Length: 79
Length: 237
Image (spheres, one colour):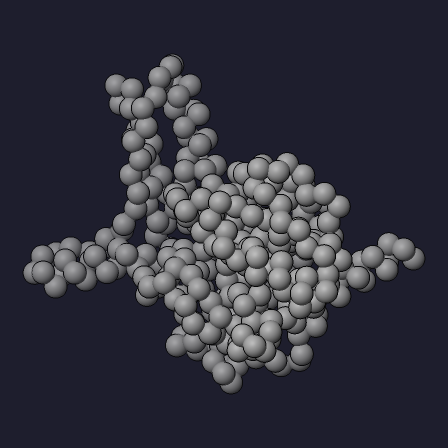
């Protein structure tokens, strides 16, 4: 199994990277783009019972892989 | 006083802190390695600047789980004084010892320059010796120093006097131009609710001797030493 974790800055947090990418896209002529957020993507190989793995990784995301003060995360486990 | 200065792989201001505490201020300071599980008999802990664990994942994210940080958690829970500088501030926020977090500078640039600081309250172990109305000139050197805390936390911190220093111009005005990283409310340094743990992004240890261009930062260490001496005197009484 593989865990896929996407970490993004919370909406209220200043995201200068996202803003810069957004401006660059507009500058390049891509129209209709907005609210760009630059985050992180983690892939982790996991073994064991799927629900146990999910519970453990959820805890790890909250405690370590993301900082809940400034970031949100999405955890997905695929076979 | 006896100080512990933590040393992580990637710390690079640890020796500067030891130098200031020992050679400039005449106190005792020892380095404590990140794998150590105890701090020994110390009066205060300094978490120095640098790039602990290469700043991987997030600044301070890995350092906070190091063995020595468990000892620091305990030390702080028992009322011990802890001061984090730059990366040390980031580590203390990640560890939950200080509110908020530090994110990428608004400019996306690593900023390495002197800034001006206004002390918000003298009512803390970290600010009591700073002269009234003094605008301190202290250098910064960071890429992730933009202070963030949610609205509710900021309201509480202001009400409790937990904002210790703010970036300002030479005249003490809190302008946007004088904010080097986009920190909310120009915040440069804060303390916890119990006021025994503080952190700041500027480097007072790089501004504690005139030969280095200024010694405004020394007052922060002198404040802490003064507070520790008072604590000792209170214990003895």
